[in-house]
Length: 189
Image (cartoon, rainbow, N blue to C red):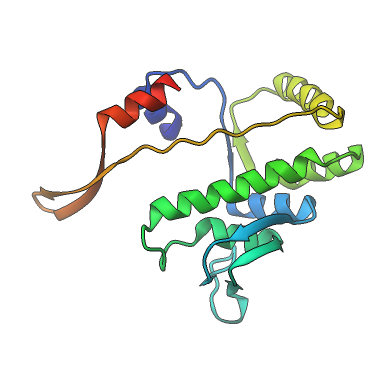
């Protein structure tokens, strides 16, 4: 996977496993969780998971609300009206992931867990072997069903600056140039 290889090279680490989920998987996962609670930071409208606008368009107001799968995906995908574009979109994606994690921590039913696994199984790509998934399932089940279960998410941001380069035949091409100090802090973390 190119993303994993790039991160391995950039951060000088070995990422053993990855899971990629597509748009429909996000919608199905959030719906299987019964929705997620998110404080939506901006008012916006975005296309649905089938990339349709018009009457299928998803519009959200600001504020704390329970989002269904389509709404959560719209928040995670939207960037057009955001002042910092992709950077702000990543923050919104993190809000959705955190909300899904928080909701998953409240699962107390094995049948709900099976619904969730069924919802995502057709929409993911991973390099984790079946026996390893079963081991992770058992660990996850113990974590979720124990009263003292704890899942923590730590966030960090790679900071940098805009850089426009003149590429012969392509013209001006935008790139993000990270600060070495920022990268060093992330690698250390």
